[in-house]
Image (cartoon, rainbow over the protein chains, first blue to last red):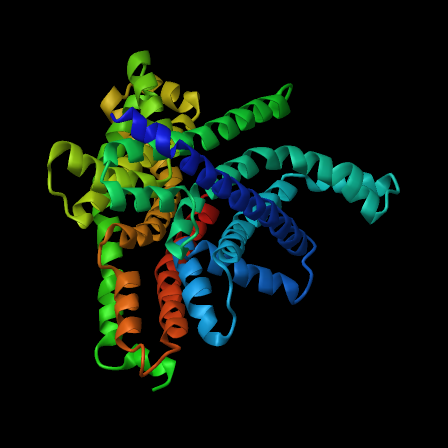
Length: 217
Length: 222
């Protein structure tokens, strides 16, 4: 292990890790937003829109992110739509993540029993109140675990961004391997960088899940 | 030449299809081996040996926490250099996807066995079934019903993930697509839009039926 090499390139790795976190973070947040909107459209069975959501979900879930990114980054410019690597990364991740988040939110909404909604109705709560005070709080609890799993999945998927020349961790690693051939050092730094990002997130999520599920039967 | 004409010009479409087959073949081989190894590992995880259980758990989490692309890099660039082995991109992919698939299959097998209520075991024993009979006639049929849709889901995930192997130099559908685009750079400058669009739809055509099948099986179970 060449420690001076590691010391020399740690700042570069830190920089690209930051890019991974930023793009991944923005993409994940937008995914949640997209997912929530899609889930609500499905939940309330809004005509026309619900079919669009279904089509989108199927397209997004049944194609790989790298193919989606290639289409955005290399394909769309030929149709006159030029996107930067960063924009492609965020749009691609949101396109992919939105459907996963939608399924999780929708499933969580489905866990709230019909009896709960009927009871709210009999208490003279209107539709908005029913959602606000009865459905959402219970669904939110059910959504935590799958949403956390999705976030980790999406953060891992960001490793594909290098394919559209986004200077993330994979890109830096590949670049350095090509230049110096210090594969052992570079790959170790790559793994450590991903672990430094993913382990804390995964740790926080398990704590969160444990907290949410406390006192639950 | 218009961009969409490139798709069917010469044997381009056949080449794209055979590129797709490369990824599908790698996933099929990997999932085949993963099923066997995963079944063994999953059964071990339901057993009583705490040491084996912890070991399997650590393996599972270690495989899961690192992105698959990183594993591909480690196998293709790292291991080959450390050991002096000369692995082809395809061999490296099969190894990585088998390591990953085994972990995921084992977890599915474990939860499928775990979801069977204890009284099923007790009732079986009280009927005088031997342990082998109990597993063959009572537990496995129920476990498989839970397992099957999840395994198909895993296969879909694997096919999608194998799209990454172009990044370690395997000539699969994305690489073929790029070759076609490059070859027609001057005749059809907008080919990229069509070629990548078609590849997108090709993946969809492979994965969507599998997703549907898995969903059907899940619904029927309920």
